Image (tube, rainbow, N blue to C red; front, top):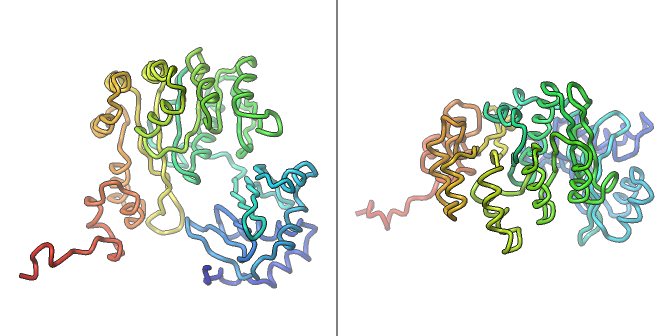
Length: 390
């Protein structure tokens, strides 16, 4: 367990927050997390509350949480139906707004020692593409009338934030009917030039596939699918993109190649040839994100691999040569394409991101070695093997 605490915060300061305002007790931890600028607050039995600050987990100065204690905190913010689901051992995903106005995406779960909870902070201000510093080509994807744009990456890589910025761009610049399907709703969009209809799994629709089916009857121009998590949802999203709609979605994949493989492999064998044809004709782009600590250590920046569909890439998909796509990304700068390593190296050279983080995330680490500050990250030279001791 981490032993480093946050300066000036203690069990007493948490108790003071409990007694100075009519908050649910858990709100005191959430308020502290917001004050510290953290991205996530973790509560679990047997450890003190943990805050993720600029990618690093830090404990606050508080006792280890007991099961009955944490259960009591959580019960105060749950509806009766949510309490029933948790009692049956099911995980819960929902949005929570604290008494002092903080908004959070929440996951509640059970583990060996008891319950646990992860609270992801959600800013009330919808992000813009400019503020996120995303590649300029991402804005161009918002100009399309139909097709599929995929934002991919591991959990916590900022996919939802990027999609929110794209919806915001569409909402500010075009007159559209935008329907989003989310689990749960994170950023709240107010209709501006466009009408934005946000629907939440479990609250408004039972599943992404059911929400997609309904959306197709609601005169959509743009459909956002929070996660293409199964073959049925994938198939319906592909149908929507093929029939004149712009579809934005996410996948938990870590490169363009893995994204294409994942889509094709997720479908039944008899549908895979049709899927390749669809991707070649209707996939607009794949953007794969990682979050990297900034050079000053005071934040994180999204670094992206970008694949834009071209005739050459379409041919590679249709002829089962997806493994050759990286070479197209390396030479496709005029179309806005880039490999992740290219984007990382450019950001390191511009002193925008931490070189040690970039080195850790890079696939080919050799170009990054000369920038590394922590020598322990570098591979040790085997003197005996190289003959240097001779």
